[in-house]
Figure 1 (cartoon, one colour):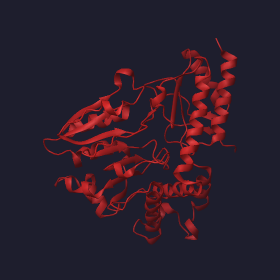
Figure 2 (cartoon, helix red, strand yellow):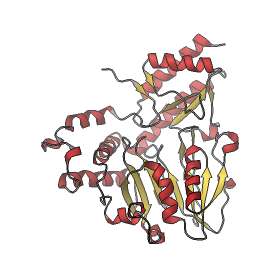
Figure 3 (spheres, one colour):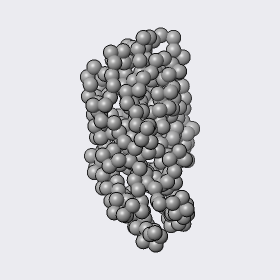
Figure 4 (cartoon, helix red, strand yellow):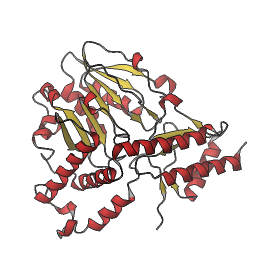
Length: 362
């Protein structure tokens, strides 16, 4: 069966080679006579998969030795709570840059735990840009500064990150991790749900610097304490073994295909192609994000009328394009072009968009 052009925002496209490999090993992993889903998480077979995934992630992201790599559950949404529970101390403030729905949810969760403030917000302009670094507000009581590096719903992305050495910088990188080179050493904690560039839903990657573990208070629920997972190497309870196996396959595929530098170049090419199609349409297509904040992962745009939007989506579906409907809170259309979305799919989409424009130009 011919593969469709998958532009889902998440769960998103997975590399065909990874799916093919997983299929070949589904019933019997490396001739073991059983599936990865059937291994004990204490077995040497599973521990090998687990360790390999951690090592590959360290290699690809160039994670320094003083950082821990954890595999947790609960998605980025659980991290919204775990971060303030672990690091928002008494008489301190969690400082949040609100650039979209997910960073706003993180801020609201922090308010349930303790004091939280907004370093900057772009809500008044419907989250159409990333604030300039000079606009960020800090205080001496900040426990940390939290940001979301890429905003899937509104299609914006941080180009440069804050470099205030007096700040503990924490980032939700769920939707653009592995898509570009990032300065891991500038962050105290990075977390990412897997279902964009890392693999299928079910596992959440957390990268944290050892020195912030000292700030964690005593008495937290065991499963919500980062120290638990560091001490037990993410094996305190049964991990999402198959999701971690799939993560390891995606990481191998990333390495075999030139690593992050190659995908960064490819993602620039794909996003430039799509944005040029939008910009050269004489207003038939309109991008939501301001040009200096445009995401290379999620391209959001609108058409002149709701009727044309619905017709566009219907015809796109007939042509084999999946996942182009915009998020319900924003409307319009969205093409998510993560690492596993091939250039051929983006070229096909641009051609379809141009043909649709010619056919329905008002």
